[in-house]
Image 1 (tube, rainbow, N blue to C red):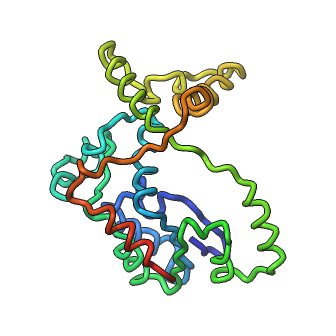
Image 2: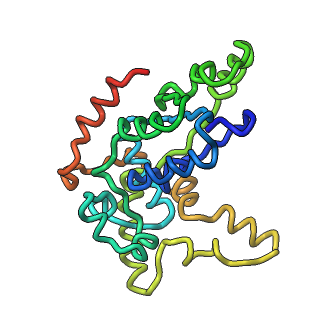
Image 3: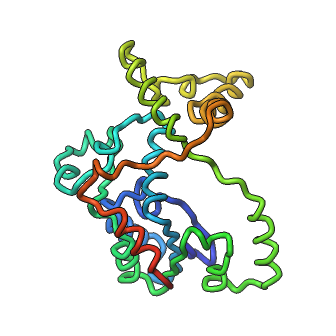
Length: 242
């Protein structure tokens, strides 16, 4: 979001918590009130199969161990969850997921909307559509970004391990959730703070487990989500051009 005298605000949640389609219109209206119609909106979209895998694994990273079919919901099932449970439970309205819908919502309100595919982000060509920057400056940014190491998501075996641990921890009234871990232990001791910042479930998996067990990408089993055509969604994404 470009606005407020050329300030730049960037956050995945600007279109809704966890980019959940259930919040698209509400957050569009909220952004309009906050930034005004003259703000330049940049929407970065990603191949749906990659994006949905990332969204789901974010919950697993946090220790919210939930089955795919309980996380991604139909409109009817999503609406049947009362608001109090909705705040406590990780769910995502998959049936309403549509990039066309999201883009059209913003184009209805904002004069300037730029769309960029995730694969093209590091080309930085979208910057010329938003800001007046010199070519040499953009070239320097490209060189710096080429060295950027992206976070690796949980592997297929790490997801299985998470469900195994959660099932057995639950027997003792425990959970992988952060609220049940050392991360919520308050202390001013520097050593304790160091432990809190570095001993998280995600970091244990990334820094230890993944170095021992061969990495195999986790893929969502869409046979359990037969109300959503992932092949069509990926094909539509591939054919999108801006």
